[in-house]
Image 1 (tube, rainbow, N blue to C red):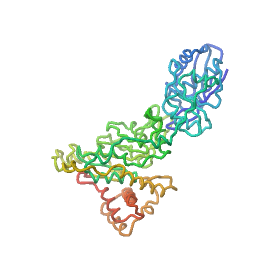
Image 2: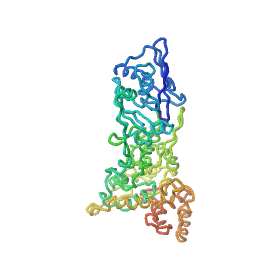
Image 3: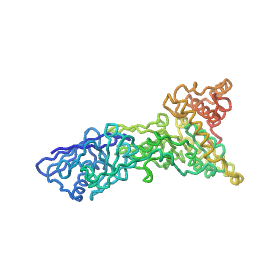
Image 4: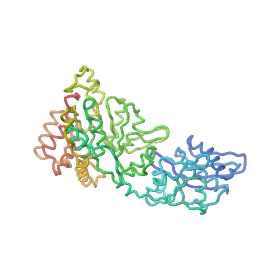
Amino acid sequence: MFTKVFSACLKGIDGHLVTVETDVSPGLPGFEVVGLPDATVKEARERVRAAIKNCGYEFPARRLTVNLAPADIKKAGSMFDLPIAVSLLLATGEAKGDADGYVFIGELSLAGALRPVPGVLPLVMGAAAAGVRKFIVPKENAAEGALCEGVQVFGASTLTETMAHLAGETLLPETVTDAVALLNSSTADVGDFSEVRGQETVKRALEIAAAGGHNILIVGSPGSGKSMLAQRLPSILPPMTMAEALEVTRIHSVAGTLPASSPLLTARPFRAPHHSASTVGLTGGGANARPGEISLAHRGVLFLDELPEFHRDAMEVLRQPMEDGVVTVTRASATYAYPSDFMLVAAMNPCRCGYHGDKTHRCRCTAASIARYVGKISGPLLDRIDLRVEAETVTYDQLSMPPAETSARIRERVTRARAMQAERYAAQGIFCNAQLSKDVEATCKLTAAAASMAKEAFTAMQMSARGYTRILKVARTIADLEDSEKVDQLHLAEAFRYYLPGDRLEM
């Protein structure tokens, strides 16, 4: 006896349709799963055996062979439990039903209950792209799977419910998710810029960074508010589009970090890995290839506090994703590409003790110690950071000042500037000034006076071509915030202001 049903597997963050073929033959009892399964898939034999028996079906005492095709793609995870069980029951005749046109995804408990699995949205999208339109998934994953347009998703709680649905006895209700309503109801609580006293220069730099998608480095003494400012950056970023929300949700679904409270991520990610994070933790990969912090920050913010304390190789691995917007992980079995279009926000002390150049505290570091500390950040990495700004120590008078401008007002300006950029770059497939890679000078058109200033500054500061290009893009963002068609001297001068290292950042 032979039967086949459909399932899906993950390769990176992409789903691929899998055919689960089952053959039941006479001979010595045995149960083999082939088709490049990993240890988790092989263990499905015991889960499926117990689930079938505990749901009241008879497990066949015959030779059973399950093939997961195509056999050249590694199969990992527990999502194959349900399709294997369904195919076995249909092949042996223990249960009747029509599984044609269905994709089955889910882990089984020993009692036959369906447990949620990660990556359901990309699995459904991948299978839908292959032409399948009906899905049975764990009930907890149904709302996530229904985010994919043009499919029918049914949430089941047990193997028994699944077989009853296929037999037409008790139909499962179709799950419908209103993605637009979820996106419009986003209420992320990330703090407000009005809560930050002083630091007007840093706030302005963060506004420019948000408006153009630029990377930024904040240097300041302990307690000056670097982390507080960075944590409030998402409050001034423009809201995500539906395409961005689905893209981010796919990544977090595969990584298993999707919150149970909502099937759709509606707020831009803010990731703040500890400085002890490994290279693999940042880039992703590992035995079963999961996205790292760089990809989890896609379309959002990657905040690296105490930047010089990160391992050198971990810092250097940021360079290629910051340029390309994609991190490529190569392993012996396959190569994975994870999206990584993020804003880097880094913070650091000016020296090891933290008080070099501080007006209220005495620095205990030697000149050589300061140079070693700051020198941990390589020139190529620093050259990829568009804005560098100093956070000065907050005074008592600043603490007693009335609340500053709210994030909502800043966000209006940022959103307006981003809308201008989206319209400008519609034909290029990019969204903001930081992503601009060609026709930079034509797009960031300077006035005659600004061009003269740029030439003098380029020579005097011994800038690299990359550094100069980034200055032009920052100046273009400042002009966008001012609703100016051309980049004039004031815009360019402010851009150079954020390029120059401060007195406490000797590089």
